Image (cartoon, rainbow, N blue to C red; front, side, top):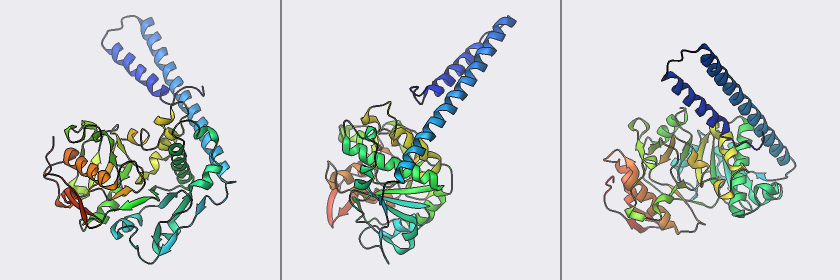
Length: 354
């Protein structure tokens, strides 16, 4: 049973639905036929239930073992340095939003350079990656993309810790993050808080990299699964991505709902798939529907394979192609003419949905 893929019970359930629909299209005159079909569907139901139960127990056992291993891993969790006010680390509006999140984790390599306001000090933790690496089971990080697998394992452990701690939601920030000052709408903090109180979201992403636009650039149309819609009830900056599957990468700054802690962790720890499919922002994060994007992009990564201006330009191109409805709020379209270190880094024409 342990080698059965996680989605097997879903496939069996789908098979049952097909059989049921097929049976409704025909009049079953034979009592024996009806009995056979009923027995088959009942057996299928119990098989689905047993598979789900066994795989859930197997997963929970794995998670318990991993968390138990962390108890002997000294000092991978540390406190962050605090300041009375945010310096140039994070815009004050974003730090105000974090006050409503149950806990904030900052993921670092050798120790967090990020600083937090004193108001967040008791609800923020620095994760020291190099210490955690020494406690990581080798099977989760061997093979291709070794560094990416180590980072992914760190994300998974944060999710398991959050599940064990009973948090309703957590923010995950990578320590190499850089922020962009934006003129956000006055109600943006309240809008974020309002969304946080609902169950209509899985992830809220402040940083994102529209990878699907990198190859074709400006000529690439926006796939339907990548189109997001700004809901006026949620203010100017929050754009709902209702469909799963969009190749939006980057895990530098996101908030995740407790309903998805274990699901996201399980996708990063699934040893039945190749390493490339376990990297946290490549396939696992895109598996969730009802993600919300914060527009315009307010964060990017300092150490990435493309420069900062390319990252911000790609984010602006995503808004141009994929965000709606039109016209977009001015608070969002400001990204089409932005500044980085007081220099204009890109300028795109007015937004038109393709």
